[in-house]
Length: 464
Image 1 (tube, rainbow, N blue to C red):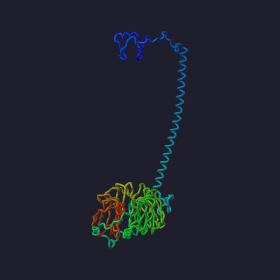
Image 2: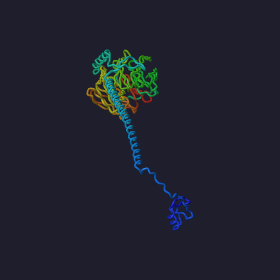
Image 3: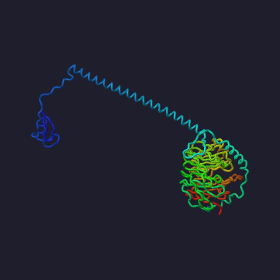
Image 4: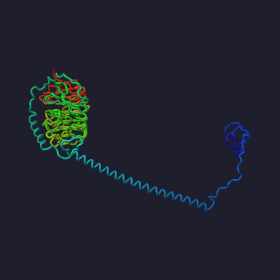
Protein backbone atom coordinates (compact mmCIF):
# COMPACT_ATOMS: atom_id res chain seq x y z
CA UNK A 1 0.00 0.00 0.00
CA UNK A 2 1.35 3.44 -0.86
CA UNK A 3 0.65 6.78 0.77
CA UNK A 4 0.74 10.20 -1.02
CA UNK A 5 1.62 13.42 0.80
CA UNK A 6 -1.14 15.83 0.05
CA UNK A 7 0.97 19.05 -0.07
CA UNK A 8 3.48 18.07 -2.75
CA UNK A 9 2.18 14.78 -4.08
CA UNK A 10 5.21 12.68 -3.07
CA UNK A 11 4.52 8.95 -2.81
CA UNK A 12 5.80 6.79 0.07
CA UNK A 13 5.30 3.30 1.46
CA UNK A 14 2.80 3.67 4.30
CA UNK A 15 4.73 1.74 6.95
CA UNK A 16 7.96 3.60 6.36
CA UNK A 17 6.49 7.13 6.16
CA UNK A 18 4.43 6.64 9.33
CA UNK A 19 7.51 5.42 11.22
CA UNK A 20 9.49 8.45 9.96
CA UNK A 21 6.74 10.92 10.98
CA UNK A 22 6.43 9.32 14.41
CA UNK A 23 10.15 9.71 14.95
CA UNK A 24 10.82 13.11 13.28
CA UNK A 25 7.51 14.82 12.64
CA UNK A 26 8.76 16.22 9.35
CA UNK A 27 8.55 15.59 5.62
CA UNK A 28 11.65 13.61 4.53
CA UNK A 29 11.79 15.47 1.24
CA UNK A 30 11.01 19.13 2.10
CA UNK A 31 11.87 18.95 5.80
CA UNK A 32 8.59 20.73 6.59
CA UNK A 33 6.28 19.80 9.47
CA UNK A 34 4.20 16.74 8.62
CA UNK A 35 1.67 14.61 10.51
CA UNK A 36 -0.10 11.35 9.73
CA UNK A 37 -3.32 13.31 9.09
CA UNK A 38 -1.68 14.98 6.13
CA UNK A 39 -1.25 11.65 4.32
CA UNK A 40 -3.73 10.48 1.72
CA UNK A 41 -4.16 6.81 1.05
CA UNK A 42 -3.94 5.75 -2.61
CA UNK A 43 -6.33 3.01 -3.68
CA UNK A 44 -4.81 0.46 -6.14
CA UNK A 45 -6.12 -2.72 -7.80
CA UNK A 46 -5.18 -5.85 -5.95
CA UNK A 47 -5.29 -8.07 -9.13
CA UNK A 48 -2.19 -7.84 -11.35
CA UNK A 49 -2.87 -7.95 -15.04
CA UNK A 50 -0.97 -10.78 -16.70
CA UNK A 51 1.51 -10.22 -19.49
CA UNK A 52 0.44 -10.87 -23.03
CA UNK A 53 1.70 -14.27 -24.03
CA UNK A 54 3.67 -13.02 -27.06
CA UNK A 55 6.83 -15.05 -26.58
CA UNK A 56 5.43 -17.95 -24.61
CA UNK A 57 4.76 -20.33 -27.50
CA UNK A 58 6.54 -21.65 -30.55
CA UNK A 59 4.09 -20.03 -33.04
CA UNK A 60 4.59 -16.63 -31.45
CA UNK A 61 8.37 -17.05 -31.59
CA UNK A 62 8.19 -18.10 -35.23
CA UNK A 63 6.06 -15.03 -35.94
CA UNK A 64 8.60 -12.73 -34.28
CA UNK A 65 11.45 -14.39 -36.16
CA UNK A 66 9.53 -14.03 -39.44
CA UNK A 67 8.93 -10.34 -38.79
CA UNK A 68 12.59 -9.78 -37.94
CA UNK A 69 13.69 -11.62 -41.08
CA UNK A 70 11.30 -9.61 -43.23
CA UNK A 71 12.62 -6.34 -41.76
CA UNK A 72 16.23 -7.45 -42.29
CA UNK A 73 15.55 -8.50 -45.88
CA UNK A 74 13.80 -5.16 -46.59
CA UNK A 75 16.70 -3.21 -45.06
CA UNK A 76 19.24 -5.21 -47.10
CA UNK A 77 17.29 -4.54 -50.29
CA UNK A 78 17.12 -0.81 -49.50
CA UNK A 79 20.87 -0.67 -48.81
CA UNK A 80 21.68 -2.49 -52.06
CA UNK A 81 19.40 -0.11 -53.96
CA UNK A 82 21.17 2.90 -52.39
CA UNK A 83 24.59 1.34 -53.14
CA UNK A 84 23.70 0.87 -56.80
CA UNK A 85 22.49 4.47 -57.06
CA UNK A 86 25.67 5.75 -55.34
CA UNK A 87 27.84 3.70 -57.71
CA UNK A 88 26.07 5.22 -60.70
CA UNK A 89 26.51 8.75 -59.34
CA UNK A 90 30.19 8.09 -58.59
CA UNK A 91 30.73 6.66 -62.09
CA UNK A 92 29.12 9.75 -63.65
CA UNK A 93 31.23 12.10 -61.48
CA UNK A 94 34.44 10.25 -62.35
CA UNK A 95 33.60 10.38 -66.05
CA UNK A 96 32.91 14.12 -65.86
CA UNK A 97 36.15 14.70 -63.94
CA UNK A 98 38.15 12.70 -66.47
CA UNK A 99 36.55 14.65 -69.32
CA UNK A 100 37.31 17.97 -67.58
CA UNK A 101 40.94 16.95 -67.06
CA UNK A 102 41.26 16.03 -70.73
CA UNK A 103 39.71 19.35 -71.83
CA UNK A 104 42.00 21.33 -69.51
CA UNK A 105 45.04 19.43 -70.79
CA UNK A 106 44.04 20.08 -74.40
CA UNK A 107 43.39 23.78 -73.78
CA UNK A 108 46.71 24.13 -71.91
CA UNK A 109 48.54 22.49 -74.80
CA UNK A 110 46.80 24.73 -77.35
CA UNK A 111 47.59 27.79 -75.20
CA UNK A 112 51.28 26.87 -75.01
CA UNK A 113 51.38 26.21 -78.75
CA UNK A 114 49.71 29.57 -79.42
CA UNK A 115 52.14 31.39 -77.15
CA UNK A 116 55.07 29.72 -78.85
CA UNK A 117 53.68 30.58 -82.28
CA UNK A 118 52.99 34.19 -81.29
CA UNK A 119 56.51 34.59 -79.99
CA UNK A 120 57.84 33.62 -83.42
CA UNK A 121 55.58 35.70 -85.64
CA UNK A 122 54.90 39.35 -86.28
CA UNK A 123 51.74 41.33 -86.89
CA UNK A 124 51.38 43.00 -90.26
CA UNK A 125 48.69 45.25 -91.61
CA UNK A 126 47.79 48.63 -93.03
CA UNK A 127 46.65 51.67 -91.10
CA UNK A 128 44.29 50.62 -88.35
CA UNK A 129 41.51 52.37 -86.55
CA UNK A 130 39.61 51.68 -83.38
CA UNK A 131 37.76 48.39 -83.67
CA UNK A 132 39.70 47.06 -86.67
CA UNK A 133 41.29 43.70 -86.02
CA UNK A 134 44.99 43.18 -86.63
CA UNK A 135 46.09 40.51 -89.12
CA UNK A 136 48.83 38.15 -88.00
CA UNK A 137 51.48 36.77 -90.31
CA UNK A 138 55.15 35.85 -90.11
CA UNK A 139 56.54 38.70 -92.23
CA UNK A 140 59.00 41.21 -90.84
CA UNK A 141 60.01 44.53 -92.34
CA UNK A 142 59.50 45.04 -96.04
CA UNK A 143 62.48 44.93 -98.36
CA UNK A 144 62.28 48.71 -98.83
CA UNK A 145 62.49 49.36 -95.11
CA UNK A 146 65.31 46.85 -94.69
CA UNK A 147 67.23 48.65 -97.43
CA UNK A 148 66.71 51.97 -95.62
CA UNK A 149 67.92 50.47 -92.33
CA UNK A 150 71.04 49.09 -94.03
CA UNK A 151 71.76 52.33 -95.87
CA UNK A 152 71.31 54.40 -92.70
CA UNK A 153 73.58 52.11 -90.71
CA UNK A 154 76.29 52.17 -93.36
CA UNK A 155 76.17 55.95 -93.65
CA UNK A 156 76.14 56.75 -89.94
CA UNK A 157 78.57 54.09 -88.71
CA UNK A 158 81.27 55.34 -91.09
CA UNK A 159 81.11 58.94 -89.91
CA UNK A 160 79.99 58.67 -86.30
CA UNK A 161 83.33 57.95 -84.64
CA UNK A 162 85.29 60.39 -86.82
CA UNK A 163 82.93 63.34 -86.74
CA UNK A 164 84.22 66.36 -84.82
CA UNK A 165 82.33 68.17 -82.12
CA UNK A 166 80.15 70.75 -83.89
CA UNK A 167 81.15 74.39 -83.70
CA UNK A 168 79.51 76.31 -80.90
CA UNK A 169 78.76 73.17 -78.91
CA UNK A 170 78.42 73.50 -75.15
CA UNK A 171 81.54 73.05 -73.04
CA UNK A 172 82.03 71.87 -69.48
CA UNK A 173 82.88 75.43 -68.49
CA UNK A 174 79.56 76.65 -69.87
CA UNK A 175 77.70 73.83 -68.12
CA UNK A 176 79.25 74.95 -64.83
CA UNK A 177 77.31 78.20 -65.12
CA UNK A 178 73.96 76.65 -66.08
CA UNK A 179 71.12 77.89 -63.88
CA UNK A 180 67.32 78.18 -64.15
CA UNK A 181 66.45 81.30 -66.16
CA UNK A 182 62.79 80.67 -67.10
CA UNK A 183 59.89 78.64 -65.79
CA UNK A 184 56.52 78.31 -67.49
CA UNK A 185 53.15 78.19 -65.83
CA UNK A 186 51.62 74.71 -65.35
CA UNK A 187 50.68 73.58 -68.86
CA UNK A 188 48.92 70.20 -68.66
CA UNK A 189 47.90 68.18 -65.63
CA UNK A 190 49.34 64.68 -65.52
CA UNK A 191 52.09 65.34 -68.09
CA UNK A 192 54.58 62.43 -68.19
CA UNK A 193 57.04 63.43 -70.92
CA UNK A 194 57.79 66.05 -73.52
CA UNK A 195 59.89 66.47 -76.64
CA UNK A 196 61.85 69.35 -78.14
CA UNK A 197 62.11 69.85 -81.89
CA UNK A 198 65.47 69.91 -83.66
CA UNK A 199 65.69 73.71 -83.68
CA UNK A 200 64.87 73.95 -80.00
CA UNK A 201 61.92 76.25 -80.69
CA UNK A 202 58.90 74.16 -79.72
CA UNK A 203 58.16 71.64 -76.98
CA UNK A 204 55.52 68.97 -77.48
CA UNK A 205 53.63 67.72 -74.43
CA UNK A 206 50.20 66.51 -73.38
CA UNK A 207 48.19 65.67 -70.30
CA UNK A 208 45.81 63.21 -68.73
CA UNK A 209 42.81 64.66 -70.59
CA UNK A 210 44.21 63.61 -73.99
CA UNK A 211 45.08 67.12 -75.18
CA UNK A 212 48.43 67.60 -76.92
CA UNK A 213 50.00 71.05 -77.11
CA UNK A 214 52.87 72.78 -78.89
CA UNK A 215 54.63 75.12 -76.47
CA UNK A 216 56.69 77.98 -77.92
CA UNK A 217 59.90 78.43 -75.94
CA UNK A 218 60.32 82.04 -77.06
CA UNK A 219 56.67 83.06 -76.64
CA UNK A 220 56.26 81.09 -73.41
CA UNK A 221 52.80 79.96 -74.48
CA UNK A 222 50.86 77.10 -76.09
CA UNK A 223 50.57 78.04 -79.76
CA UNK A 224 48.74 74.96 -81.06
CA UNK A 225 46.61 72.14 -79.62
CA UNK A 226 45.57 68.74 -80.94
CA UNK A 227 43.27 66.01 -79.64
CA UNK A 228 45.23 62.83 -78.95
CA UNK A 229 42.42 61.06 -77.09
CA UNK A 230 40.89 58.87 -75.99
CA UNK A 231 43.05 58.36 -72.91
CA UNK A 232 45.91 60.31 -71.42
CA UNK A 233 48.99 61.25 -73.46
CA UNK A 234 51.67 58.70 -72.54
CA UNK A 235 54.56 59.89 -74.73
CA UNK A 236 55.29 62.43 -77.47
CA UNK A 237 58.06 63.22 -79.93
CA UNK A 238 58.92 65.17 -83.06
CA UNK A 239 59.78 63.68 -86.45
CA UNK A 240 60.97 66.73 -88.32
CA UNK A 241 57.98 69.06 -88.18
CA UNK A 242 55.50 66.26 -87.55
CA UNK A 243 54.17 65.75 -84.03
CA UNK A 244 53.59 62.22 -82.72
CA UNK A 245 51.83 61.08 -79.54
CA UNK A 246 50.81 57.82 -77.93
CA UNK A 247 48.00 57.39 -75.42
CA UNK A 248 46.96 55.23 -72.50
CA UNK A 249 44.20 53.79 -74.72
CA UNK A 250 46.76 52.37 -77.19
CA UNK A 251 46.43 54.96 -79.96
CA UNK A 252 49.39 56.43 -81.86
CA UNK A 253 48.68 59.57 -83.87
CA UNK A 254 50.68 61.81 -86.19
CA UNK A 255 49.98 65.47 -87.01
CA UNK A 256 51.48 67.82 -89.55
CA UNK A 257 50.82 71.56 -89.28
CA UNK A 258 48.14 70.77 -86.71
CA UNK A 259 46.23 68.38 -88.99
CA UNK A 260 46.04 64.67 -88.21
CA UNK A 261 47.67 62.68 -91.02
CA UNK A 262 47.79 59.18 -89.51
CA UNK A 263 46.21 57.21 -86.69
CA UNK A 264 47.08 53.72 -85.50
CA UNK A 265 45.48 51.43 -82.97
CA UNK A 266 47.77 48.43 -82.71
CA UNK A 267 48.25 48.05 -78.95
CA UNK A 268 45.84 46.25 -76.65
CA UNK A 269 46.35 48.71 -73.82
CA UNK A 270 48.59 51.69 -73.15
CA UNK A 271 51.24 52.59 -75.73
CA UNK A 272 53.82 53.56 -73.12
CA UNK A 273 56.70 54.97 -75.21
CA UNK A 274 57.75 56.09 -78.69
CA UNK A 275 61.05 56.17 -80.59
CA UNK A 276 62.05 57.32 -84.08
CA UNK A 277 64.62 55.64 -86.33
CA UNK A 278 67.61 57.78 -87.42
CA UNK A 279 66.35 57.59 -91.01
CA UNK A 280 63.14 59.34 -89.97
CA UNK A 281 61.10 56.78 -91.92
CA UNK A 282 60.38 54.29 -89.11
CA UNK A 283 58.48 54.99 -85.91
CA UNK A 284 58.39 52.55 -83.00
CA UNK A 285 55.99 52.19 -80.10
CA UNK A 286 55.97 49.83 -77.13
CA UNK A 287 53.07 48.88 -74.87
CA UNK A 288 51.86 47.08 -71.82
CA UNK A 289 50.47 44.38 -74.13
CA UNK A 290 54.06 43.01 -74.32
CA UNK A 291 54.56 44.05 -77.93
CA UNK A 292 56.44 46.62 -79.96
CA UNK A 293 55.34 47.99 -83.32
CA UNK A 294 57.32 49.47 -86.20
CA UNK A 295 55.42 51.93 -88.44
CA UNK A 296 56.36 52.73 -92.03
CA UNK A 297 56.08 56.53 -92.18
CA UNK A 298 56.43 56.60 -95.97
CA UNK A 299 53.10 54.84 -96.30
CA UNK A 300 51.66 55.62 -92.85
CA UNK A 301 51.07 51.94 -92.13
CA UNK A 302 52.05 49.33 -89.57
CA UNK A 303 55.16 47.54 -90.82
CA UNK A 304 55.38 44.83 -88.17
CA UNK A 305 54.37 44.03 -84.61
CA UNK A 306 56.39 41.69 -82.42
CA UNK A 307 55.26 40.03 -79.21
CA UNK A 308 57.69 39.82 -76.26
CA UNK A 309 57.32 38.16 -72.86
CA UNK A 310 56.82 41.23 -70.64
CA UNK A 311 55.03 44.58 -70.60
CA UNK A 312 57.30 47.26 -72.12
CA UNK A 313 57.76 50.71 -70.60
CA UNK A 314 60.41 52.60 -72.60
CA UNK A 315 62.27 52.34 -75.91
CA UNK A 316 65.01 53.77 -78.12
CA UNK A 317 66.91 53.22 -81.38
CA UNK A 318 70.68 52.83 -81.65
CA UNK A 319 72.35 55.90 -83.26
CA UNK A 320 73.13 53.79 -86.33
CA UNK A 321 69.58 52.47 -86.51
CA UNK A 322 70.33 48.76 -86.68
CA UNK A 323 69.34 47.98 -83.06
CA UNK A 324 66.20 48.71 -81.07
CA UNK A 325 66.11 48.57 -77.26
CA UNK A 326 63.01 48.20 -75.09
CA UNK A 327 62.85 48.26 -71.30
CA UNK A 328 60.38 45.98 -69.54
CA UNK A 329 58.43 46.00 -66.34
CA UNK A 330 60.27 42.80 -65.40
CA UNK A 331 63.60 44.68 -65.18
CA UNK A 332 65.01 43.39 -68.47
CA UNK A 333 66.39 45.54 -71.29
CA UNK A 334 65.76 43.70 -74.56
CA UNK A 335 67.83 44.59 -77.60
CA UNK A 336 66.45 43.61 -81.03
CA UNK A 337 67.83 43.52 -84.54
CA UNK A 338 65.69 46.02 -86.44
CA UNK A 339 65.85 44.21 -89.79
CA UNK A 340 64.92 40.74 -88.52
CA UNK A 341 63.11 41.75 -85.27
CA UNK A 342 65.03 38.96 -83.50
CA UNK A 343 66.25 39.30 -79.93
CA UNK A 344 69.96 40.15 -80.05
CA UNK A 345 70.69 40.56 -76.31
CA UNK A 346 69.09 40.93 -72.89
CA UNK A 347 70.38 42.90 -69.91
CA UNK A 348 69.02 42.48 -66.37
CA UNK A 349 68.27 45.37 -64.03
CA UNK A 350 67.07 45.66 -60.43
CA UNK A 351 63.54 46.86 -61.21
CA UNK A 352 61.10 48.04 -63.88
CA UNK A 353 62.96 50.08 -66.51
CA UNK A 354 61.93 53.76 -66.55
CA UNK A 355 64.49 55.30 -68.93
CA UNK A 356 67.01 54.26 -71.58
CA UNK A 357 69.33 56.30 -73.79
CA UNK A 358 71.94 55.25 -76.35
CA UNK A 359 75.22 57.14 -76.35
CA UNK A 360 76.33 58.62 -79.66
CA UNK A 361 79.57 56.63 -79.37
CA UNK A 362 77.47 53.64 -80.50
CA UNK A 363 78.72 51.24 -77.84
CA UNK A 364 77.00 52.40 -74.66
CA UNK A 365 73.42 52.03 -73.50
CA UNK A 366 72.35 53.90 -70.36
CA UNK A 367 69.42 52.63 -68.28
CA UNK A 368 67.58 53.56 -65.09
CA UNK A 369 65.17 51.47 -63.01
CA UNK A 370 62.13 52.53 -61.02
CA UNK A 371 63.03 53.75 -57.54
CA UNK A 372 66.77 53.41 -58.18
CA UNK A 373 69.22 56.23 -57.43
CA UNK A 374 71.82 55.07 -59.94
CA UNK A 375 72.10 54.68 -63.69
CA UNK A 376 73.89 51.79 -65.36
CA UNK A 377 75.97 52.22 -68.49
CA UNK A 378 76.17 49.01 -70.51
CA UNK A 379 78.80 48.20 -73.10
CA UNK A 380 76.94 46.53 -75.97
CA UNK A 381 80.08 44.76 -77.14
CA UNK A 382 80.82 43.17 -73.74
CA UNK A 383 77.19 42.85 -72.61
CA UNK A 384 78.32 44.16 -69.23
CA UNK A 385 78.05 47.28 -67.07
CA UNK A 386 81.12 49.48 -67.50
CA UNK A 387 80.10 52.37 -65.26
CA UNK A 388 77.41 53.37 -62.73
CA UNK A 389 76.46 56.83 -61.53
CA UNK A 390 74.65 57.39 -58.23
CA UNK A 391 72.88 60.74 -57.77
CA UNK A 392 71.51 59.85 -54.29
CA UNK A 393 67.86 60.36 -55.35
CA UNK A 394 65.37 58.47 -57.55
CA UNK A 395 65.88 58.85 -61.30
CA UNK A 396 63.15 59.68 -63.81
CA UNK A 397 65.03 60.40 -67.04
CA UNK A 398 68.45 60.05 -68.71
CA UNK A 399 69.56 61.74 -71.92
CA UNK A 400 72.81 61.79 -73.91
CA UNK A 401 73.48 64.78 -76.14
CA UNK A 402 74.66 64.60 -79.75
CA UNK A 403 78.42 64.82 -79.18
CA UNK A 404 78.46 61.88 -76.77
CA UNK A 405 80.28 63.83 -74.05
CA UNK A 406 77.52 64.76 -71.62
CA UNK A 407 74.91 62.61 -69.93
CA UNK A 408 72.04 64.39 -68.20
CA UNK A 409 70.30 62.56 -65.35
CA UNK A 410 67.11 63.93 -63.78
CA UNK A 411 64.76 63.10 -60.94
CA UNK A 412 62.25 64.70 -58.55
CA UNK A 413 65.12 65.95 -56.35
CA UNK A 414 67.18 67.59 -59.09
CA UNK A 415 69.48 66.89 -62.01
CA UNK A 416 73.16 66.31 -62.70
CA UNK A 417 75.26 66.28 -65.85
CA UNK A 418 78.16 63.84 -66.10
CA UNK A 419 80.95 64.30 -68.65
CA UNK A 420 83.05 61.53 -70.15
CA UNK A 421 86.44 62.46 -71.55
CA UNK A 422 87.57 60.23 -74.41
CA UNK A 423 91.16 61.30 -74.02
CA UNK A 424 91.51 60.57 -70.30
CA UNK A 425 88.68 57.99 -70.11
CA UNK A 426 87.50 59.66 -66.91
CA UNK A 427 84.20 60.98 -65.65
CA UNK A 428 83.48 64.38 -64.13
CA UNK A 429 80.41 66.31 -62.98
CA UNK A 430 80.22 69.81 -64.50
CA UNK A 431 76.63 70.45 -63.34
CA UNK A 432 74.47 69.68 -60.35
CA UNK A 433 71.22 71.54 -59.81
CA UNK A 434 68.19 71.18 -57.55
CA UNK A 435 65.63 71.72 -60.32
CA UNK A 436 63.16 68.79 -60.12
CA UNK A 437 62.35 66.98 -63.34
CA UNK A 438 60.42 63.93 -64.54
CA UNK A 439 61.72 64.43 -68.11
CA UNK A 440 64.37 66.54 -69.80
CA UNK A 441 65.70 67.51 -73.23
CA UNK A 442 68.91 69.12 -74.53
CA UNK A 443 68.43 72.40 -76.35
CA UNK A 444 70.02 73.55 -79.60
CA UNK A 445 73.76 72.68 -79.59
CA UNK A 446 73.24 71.52 -75.99
CA UNK A 447 73.25 75.18 -75.02
CA UNK A 448 70.31 74.67 -72.67
CA UNK A 449 68.58 72.00 -70.62
CA UNK A 450 64.79 71.99 -70.53
CA UNK A 451 63.18 70.16 -67.62
CA UNK A 452 59.55 69.13 -67.13
CA UNK A 453 58.35 68.81 -63.53
CA UNK A 454 55.42 66.87 -62.08
CA UNK A 455 53.18 69.96 -62.14
CA UNK A 456 53.56 70.34 -65.91
CA UNK A 457 55.95 73.32 -65.80
CA UNK A 458 58.94 73.61 -68.16
CA UNK A 459 62.09 75.09 -66.65
CA UNK A 460 64.97 76.25 -68.87
CA UNK A 461 68.53 76.02 -67.56
CA UNK A 462 71.28 77.84 -69.44
CA UNK A 463 74.07 80.34 -68.91
CA UNK A 464 72.87 83.68 -67.54
